[in-house]
Length: 330
Image 1: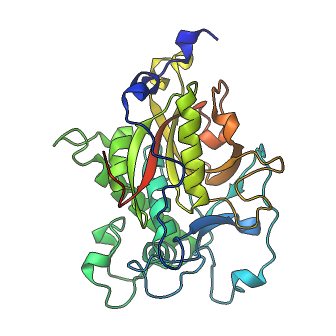
Image 2: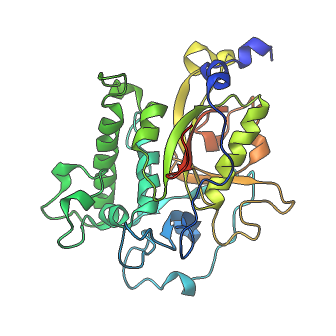
């Protein structure tokens, strides 16, 4: 393929962004880092699981938000599924309360990724998505910002249909938040989805903040960025990735077109975050299919062909990278 046809908007922007800080953005805290991950769950696939809450976010032990009822045995008593192998084409499904965790329309891939990111780090939000309820006497300032104000109060719709309705409402609310003041004081057109810079502004996970970084996968810097993404997921922190095409597939594809979420590897994996040969593996949640795909990090470099983990696109073109909240921004 000719060199010009591999160009994209991010190929031109990437050299002008500041350097990446390093591969481990999660800060250490007394009692260990807050590790909240999407973990393999047998036939129901992946779902947000919290193993150590952020002390300011919650006061009781978190639980697996994919459990449909209290009669379900605790995670320790359920047999651990075999981890998927890199290159597996089907991926594993993501569910919340028995409902598929998918984007509701073609404009909400970014807001779905941000919603799942936040729910992975916030038990209150995860419980609301699954059950439609909030803790009694929750102060207004503790209500997760991803919950639409119009959805508060009243009787929660039960079952998977209720979960789907809440997912849809929350996705649209997050899209409205990322569209606001996206172009200075002007809004971003909602029909164009979520711009990377407001995704970084709205992304919410305990102990980190996010910044958007364009990525050209044919450069040496791309490996550094992917290594940072891999390090973040090993530390329990999800990372949004924008995907797209290049000029070889047309001018309109040479911009960010879709958003996926790099999630922490399943706890049951024999070589957590790596394959049997020790090569780093990223686990990518695609909101369009509602599935998580394991992908070798090396397979994301200098790509030419579409990949299901990238929503059918060929390149990762932008990264919304986490950094410790106490890090120097200079």
